[in-house]
Image (cartoon, rainbow, N blue to C red; front, top):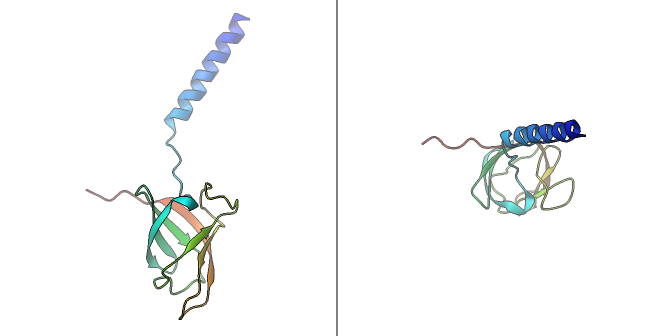
Length: 116
């Protein structure tokens, strides 16, 4: 009995240490998007409300992304709390010069911190 308790304690400690050693997952949440910069028609730099930046890579097919004044993200779960990622969409509403677009997201990564 004592051996089982000790083994469970050791395993629990090892698992907790391993979890603590992994970096916290950083994700871009729908409800945290604060702005964006269009690099080109396949790349956006998106900033969240706490200033973290993310590189969002889009599949080919969307165009003239520099002009829309509004864009939104659609996540597969439909919840603003979920992370935006592969196979989600960037929705670009129509304006006077362009039709609406639904751009497939290929990848979202935390942007590298700027060099000091």
